[in-house]
Amino acid sequence: MAPTVLRGVVLLLLGFVLVRMGAAALHGYRFQQAIQDSVNIDTARPNPDTRAMRDRVLEQARVMGLRLERDDVDVQGRLPGYQVRVRFGLPLDFYVYERDVNIEFTARSQMVSSGR
Image 1 (cartoon, rainbow, N blue to C red):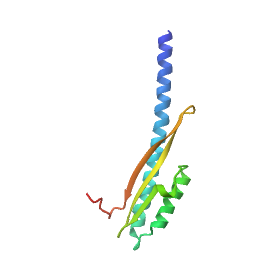
Image 2: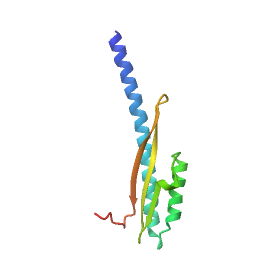
Image 3: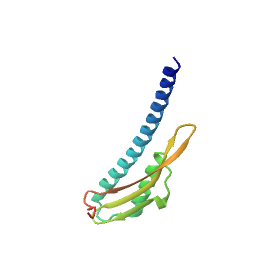
Image 4: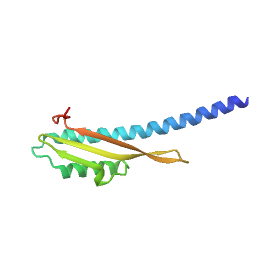
């Protein structure tokens, strides 16, 4: 009986960890998609405004509850479009243990080549 209960507890803990990690990963993915959408929408502007784009990225992070500093966002305006590099810590909270997973991604407007 005891091994069955122990297995059940281990499976519950594993399920809890997977759900928490999955929720954090989904939150990070939604942030990346929001930034990519913003970059794609703003591509139509004749003169890329890098300062305004950085402010939008920082505001989106604030709205989504992510800790992001100005130095974590690198925006390069290219005609036409943008390339936005973002570095942030995605919080993983297991109630008794919390840590940030470092994420870095680049969002490019459709018209900006990757240089590869």
